[in-house]
Length: 207
Image 1: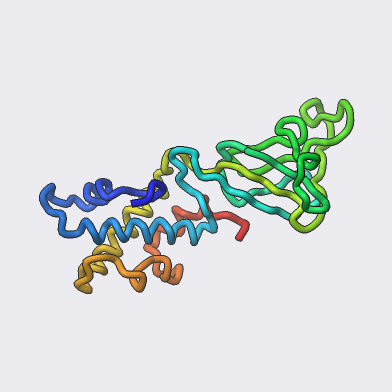
Image 2: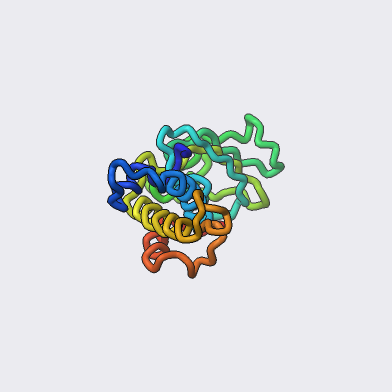
């Protein structure tokens, strides 16, 4: 199992009330968890949801929008490693911005707010916000996103959808969940009725 899976074998066994000595579905469960976690991330347009050791970083190249707010694909933000603003897309040392001086990171929203340029110009003291340099891929952001604890709705969807896949695999006599049964290949209408509602708040507006 992967470190960023959204539920565990033990949790699925408990959720489905498996007898302690019954391990007949363990391979099915393990493979289903992997596929369901991948499917959830895909449907939510996310690369990182659960980041337990804060070890996974993301690099994004974004188009400058000429506005103060820049929305990242992943959230929450655990830390910002670097932000470059580069009209020529060189992303060198001269383009490196300083957090809390050049921009503010709104961690829960996954958003960067550009601060105004110039001596004494500070949004923190009532100044007007700055703007991100317009243009294609003018912004490079390296940051660490994700939840260090799995939110309850994500875990619940993982448990329910995994259980469904395991039941389907067992009915077909399969010892593991095959890709043809994976939620990666499901049309969204194949999700359980509650799944999309529970996942909605975690779905990125950026594809």
